[in-house]
Image (cartoon, rainbow, N blue to C red; front, side):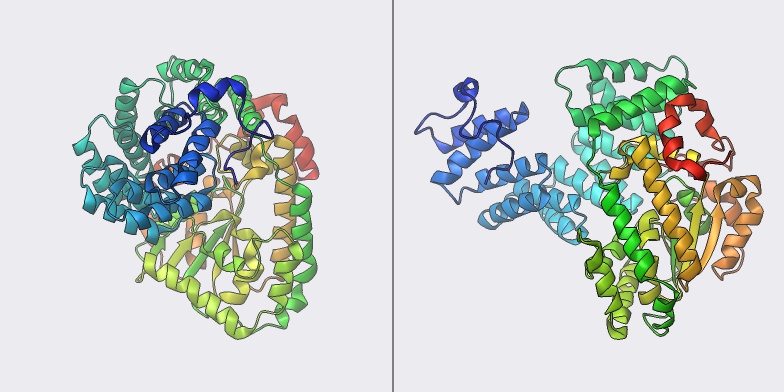
Length: 543
């Protein structure tokens, strides 16, 4: 089966045959031909070359490895892992193959396997910059910034001109709140390649742009190059929007965000999503929970911060993590993974609801214990560990059965401000609802509907953190939050912006600043460009 779609039902377009291997061409030459084509983003022709070799030599490790890299280009990561595992099995001492497999595991969040292969790659070749950077990326993903920095510095010691190392270090330093150093890394990368998309995007996010910032011209020039891919255009339009937003050119900024969403596109099914929430509201009523009073693991360590992205979740986590006895673990995927064992990841909304209805007490306790084991790997000492995955708001019924004494902090924000802020950020493909203003408003409506239901029926302790009230009376809200978590007050929570930790969210810059209120009613700066959002939100918008 081909990795990439063919434009013609049989074979390849006639005009590309000159680039393809002749009959009997030696395998190394055919593979090099494929590599050259892949570097020029001619992926279908590259695949033809690699498959030509594999038809003759099914155990050609290099061809298998290259098919894996092509699968990553096609975003077929599991297929990539399969190809690369076969390559590594054939040549276990090949550092490049190990690096590529480790990187693929990085992409699916399998930290254990990623580090295993990346460390082996470095053991085989301690000057392999790609492996050093990928290992840094792995530790960065787990908020282990100090360890990640060590690997990036090793990479730069090998090659001070490595764009991958410079950009990776810049991103990490931004996460760690070291903005000046981050800007310097991105600047060095741009000095080497002024059209580097990752460096331009990173620079835009690392600091506030001022009038006349030269980065805007570089971003616009890169957008005009015919070689720029659609995916790169998404990043560049977001970068241009961020720069213009910083410069108070709000109408021009929103134009770039709209262009980014139009290019990225998404087939997010709001009707299916609505049916999922319908099934939750219908199945998980008060009687459902009353019939299950002794389920789950009774630990009080877990704290879940939930809500829409950009609703103040990162600020709230930073307040908590500034406390000496609370650990901020970042956005953990584990709850959704555990819910997946009950079919939450299936397309049929009824599957998960049915599995929840039949969930036995012993199984609920087992799932809760699995979650706690994961927390203990992150931190085994703190009285409370905070999981800041915002979309866990969908799974409060599940959390209540497996961790009945967990505490829930619900961050809320004005719907127009919240959605506008979401729209201006380049979230992953998993946030498909963010593809256009209308769909975003519809999604917010469903989120609000579900949270109102949970507040009535779920037997969990839920504490509201309204963003506007938090910035208006910060100390009162901070003290109320810490009191809700059941630990003694710590004055460090008022100095949250001084807390040194790795933060990997779009709010990583904001949480390094003292509390400010300039984001309240910010949506009004964008005028009628937000009319589709306002219409979709309907009665949720304050008159």
